[in-house]
Image (cartoon, rainbow over all chains, first blue to last red; front, side, top):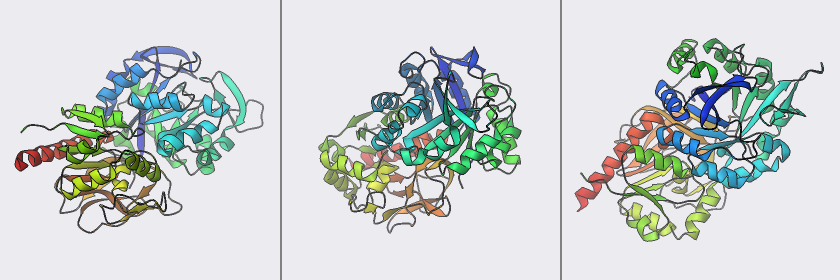
Length: 253
Length: 208
């Protein structure tokens, strides 16, 4: 039986881990290779590296950071940030990534998902979605791009519903409203997206501990991602996995 | 025992950087190649694989590697096939109907049953059968939409479960074919790589 995945996310800027609240007020949270190695040792199932300054600076994710993390990790690495096409993806994979995550570029040109899966296979392609609740009382969520700075008006649930047909193999779903707040995942968002797609869904944004993760799995997530709680040593991955197992979930230990 | 240089088949699209990094951590020498003579005769060969079955066979055919791989297996030279690499050893796959595989494993690769969440992404429990020498029980990392559903004649199998049992890995002497990614399966995966590399070294030393 497939285990529930616990994923540690490294938001990276200029070669260092940073973390903030709702993608802003970023503070330094350590060295990506050192933290990545620690998280693998603690039992992280995957690592996601998001180069948060790549798209705003008009460049692809830092290859040097990927190489340094790959050299010390024996678990899957997903890389996102500024990947605009097959060439960027090729460079990121050659540096040691196993999957690439695309967000802004896919909204601009959905065909990029088809190009990437045609070349590298669907299992290599992660559609990253930053979703924010609509403020106009209409309900639902809209997709944000460019590290949360651009509201697109695109409906997040409808966008995920079409992801598989376009070539995506997985969905990394971040709630902008909950990011860094430790108030828990946006369960309604997870439920709506998991119903709209057959693809595995990674829930992200808002976790403060195992109770939130149990909720996210119950809402339909296949994997849960967290960042701040690990970087600040609030909680070890081992401890979280023990709690998940106690809640009756299958985890790798 | 001296460790041989491992040749990794340069398929162009596979995650060869992760395979290389894992081999580095095992402390062994390795390099990428598509040289048919090397692929046939190297003391240890890795056939990685990411992407579709049809595209994978096309690349092996273009590089003239079909016969060299079939010959090295007939001569029982050490081979590690990973994910799509394992599928390519079979007779064919539902992923690319009409495209013949290398035919070394007498079986056909099939899709998971309808309604199952695919790709199968993540860590699944691997249980080796009694004939397995290299494989140990543990959790391995999988990323696949197709799999072998039955144990092929002449191979020792390890089993995992995703909406029913499927073949997680096959071994026969120094030939190891994994549906999962040992290079991404943490310490357990590295231990399996080391066991296979030791078997390769034993093979070389024993043969000479």
